[in-house]
Image 1 (tube, rainbow, N blue to C red):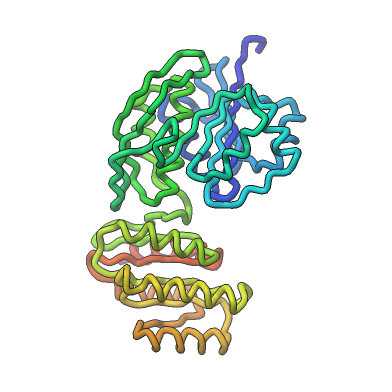
Image 2 (tube, rainbow, N blue to C red):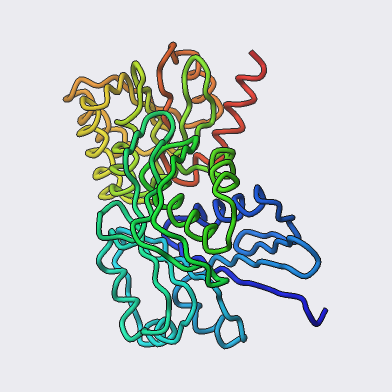
Length: 355
């Protein structure tokens, strides 16, 4: 036990779910590491009896508490982008004390604030701009993502080895800009640990996707895609990602929770209306968790006025079974909504398997 080594990777990704966390995990497993323990936010892996790696998903506000436990991170990835980061004195102080490798997305200028006062860490930046240490070129976003991973300046591994500038092709079997960011960060971590490039590439290609994050539920003569959406920003990002795909028409299932309030519901509906002619949305299907005459009137007013056919359901199983029959060859059945659509995948797959 005296020679046992434990290396820790911290992933701060509270706004984006556990995408980067999951990619890093799968890359290591594809590189020969075995799973020792796993829960939603912690993974322990082993390569041999003396070589262990822990991956911890955490929020910035917990960094001080983790440090006080005596946990020393060898690599920290800050993956959030597009959210205003509220940096308390404690968070700044914790980051200023880090002497690990920091992997930072700099497409969001707010993230640079995390480095203030830190002159000890080795910082590796990534993003889609040419100022980053690591970027992606030759992007091809369609029903999957292809790009070239470009290391523009040399970096050092944890063992002190130097990796010279390089580039190599990467393919991941899902889509959405957030997956490109996560792939870049995950590859950097893999390189810092000396993993072979082919193992990293294979690990990314074999990842099946993440629950309700532009998830391909089904891909055959038509495609079913499920994505968690809560607010207008979520809906806008989802539609931006969809416009890169090849398809005939879209049937959109939009979940509505009455408790969201009429203001948020109307804003979400306006986003749908704005994107409908751009994306070729043939019909909108609403699953509403409770009957509400005000919501029904708003839907009727907005969608009849804009000439977009729609249906309203109050039973999710009935909704999915009915609408699945109307999906045509090369269509996308797009599911967008919050937790009330969580069971959609199981219902749809059961229905498809019974056909």
